[in-house]
Each structure stands twice: as structure tokens, then as C-alpha cells.
Length: 488
Ligand code: BG6
Image 1 (cartoon, rainbow, N blue to C red):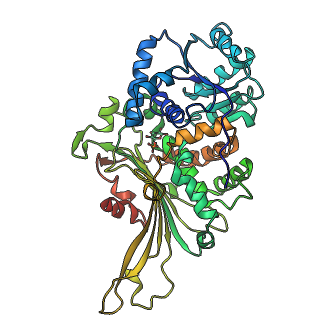
Image 2 (image 1 turned 180 degrees about the vertical axis):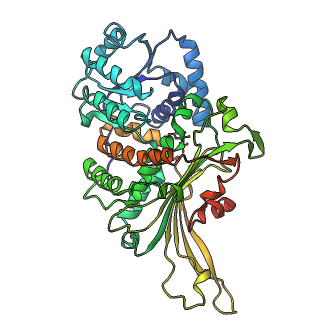
Image 3 (image 1 turned 90 degrees about the vertical axis):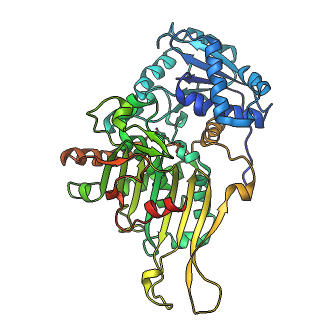
């Protein structure tokens, strides 16, 4: 069993530190950490902001964000201790003068590692990196964390990588995809590679199809401007869903050494089949939500949410993808994601093939086993297997779930994905972060969808908020979307 490495002293410099993500995810991650390990190490958080920021207003927002995110772990005492690590730094522009206050602050604590966290639009990554370099603020031990989305398409993503790599080495760059920090996602690797039972059956001989679903009941919230330019394909599929697909489909890496894992994921991305004019119509569906009710609350349509009535941005995508390699020949991977769905849940379902010959009667009512890895809201693993219904009267059977619920088995607070990933950055473990070539391949495949949608002028199918998405997304062999929802 691996031992946890302690944190070395560090300075975190957060660009975009007054943004929504910082308050919802990044600060709560540190708060939990301090609570769990009060005197682990010395650190400071430098919050970079452009406009004059009232410290009082900042700390009020911080307190509110923490209360929402950490619930009853919040206390005035904990908050006071936490804020003692903060320094607000105004950098009116990215220039030597603009960064002088930051430079002074960092130079006072010269011996600590520096972590630059870019929680800004990726269009700003280049200029921030260049300025840090010009000011001499990047040391060999410095690191940079890049938040998604990394570019808008293949070209801009290549460009973004290029400009950041002019200032940082690849070994210093941490491209975050928070889905890789989720507990069940990590457990997928343990499940596959620490249990011989599954890995032997993990191929097209035994698996009928794989379904990866991320269903959200939220709409676009306060992110209309960003989301309308992005859409569900870029926002969710290009990164989160493809990363999950990679972990399901990859070959066993030689070890968890950072590049071994990334090499295996890259091979999967390279093996993804591109779409063409025919498959884009038969194997993809895009949709947009209209008004409806989510958990009995009336909600607006997407167009009303963004106050723009001619938008064709998709808020739902379903795709049937194929990994063209030996292991996965002709096994469909159904990827689905949507906003304003009936429920918030995400899972990965491996549908095994039914038994070859049913000695109990017809094969129609003998579905194959299913392995379900539930990512949220609760984190659990289920194996659905056929079981005899007790009692006389012949062999009657039905599917029964063997469940491993994390909370029941481990009875510990499960750290949020951001907690784990930020800890990995501090410790210098890049395994769960994307390498530049993975990102490029993911964009290449995503562009085959975008380009073909545009060529065939694919239209959104409208779906009511609070439903399970466009009916046409219930594609071949799929039972998960409908049936699982009724089980929730
Ligand atoms: C983000 C997307 O990356 O992931 C959001 O930009 C989405 O649109 C979010 O809501 C979902 O994350 P989670 O962890 O809540 O499933």
C-alpha cells in the first residue's frame, strides 16, 4: 500500500481567484485539507484580481461559498484560521509593473514551491505565462495548473498548449479534468487492475456495450456567455466523458508511472473512430432543453436562460462511439450528457453479453450481467447478476444487485475531486492530469463530430426540462437511460 507523501511548503497563486469555480471548488478543497491536517505545512494563497477588491467583500463571498460547500464542517474558528493564509493581490494588467506586488510577495517566501493556478478563460493563459516568465517568477520547481476548457477547437487548443509551453516545461504543467479525481473513477482502475475476475472478461468477447452517462439537472446557471459558445460536446464530452472512456478502454499500463498511464489513454483516443456524413446522422443526437419541471419546480427554456432566442447550442449530446482496436472490436460506447435532465446522476455501465445458451428456457429474459460504477450523487459499485427466486416452482430467476456503497464500507468523508487533484499538484504527481498530446487527440475526434454536424446541418431535438432527453437518444441496445432513472 502506498504511503501518503506530506506537503512541502508552497505558495499558490490563483488567477481568477474571485471567480465562481474558486469559491465553489478550489477554496473549499483547501479548507477541508486544513481541517484534516491543521499543521501539515506552511502555505499562502495569493488571490489575483484585476479590479480593486474590497477585502471585506471578498471574505464575505468566501465565507458564503465555504458554508455552501463544506456544510457543517464550517466554523468561525476554522474560517479565521483559513483566511490567515490569504493575501489579495491586485494586478491591473499582465506586465512587469502589474506583477510587481506579486513578485514582492513571492520573493519574501523564496524557498517555497510556487503553484500558479489559471482559473481564467484559456485565452489569458499565454499572456499570464509570458509575463511570469519575463518577471523571472518561474523556477524549475514551479508548477502551473490549467483549468478547462483548454481551447475552443483543435487549433486553439494546440495554440494554448504552445504558448504555455513557451514558459513552462511539460513536467510542470497540470491540465485538470476533475472527473479523474472522483473516487469511483479512481476505483475503476483498482477494480480493473487489482481483480483478475474482471480484466479477463474485459473485451468484445464478453462485453456487449458500454454506457457512460453524465446527467445534470442544473441548467446553465450564471455561465450563459461561456456555455453558449461551448455547448455540451465541448463542455463535457471532449474532456470528462472521453477521459472516462479512456479509463474503461485502455490496456493495463505497465505501472502507474505518470507517462505509462497517459500513453495507454492516448492509444485509446487514437483508436476512436471518426464520424462521417452517414454515422453523424445515425450515431449522434444533439438536443436543447425547453421549459419544463425539474423536481416539481418550473424552469425556463435554454433560450430564456441565456436571453438569446436564435441559439443553436446543444445542451444534450448522445453519441455511439467505437474504439477500433483488437480488444473493443464493434463494441459500442454510448456517451450521453445533458443539462436540465430529470435527475443528477453519472455512471459507467458495462453491459456483459448474455450466457451463450440458456438452459432455463428462452434467452429473451436472460439479460447479461451489468457492472455499474456510480459516480454521483452517491459513489458506489453494483454488479447485477441473475439469481434464483427462492422457493419451489422450478427455476425462476431475476437480476439482483450486489452493491458496494462507499459510505457503508469505508465510513469516511470522501474528499471532493478537487481536494485530491490539488493535493496531487502539490506533491508533484501528474498521473491524473492530461498530457498535451491526449488533449490534441481528444480535440481531433471532437472536431470530427463538430465538422460533420455542420456539414449535414444537424439540428437540435428539443426536450422538455426534467425529462430524460430527446427520445431519439434511446439508441440501440440502450436500456440504461430509461430504466435506471426509474430505479433512482
Ligand atoms: C464542468 C462543466 O466541467 O463540469 C459544467 O463545465 C458541469 O458544465 C460540471 O456542470 C459537472 O461537474 P460535476 O462534478 O458536478 O459532475
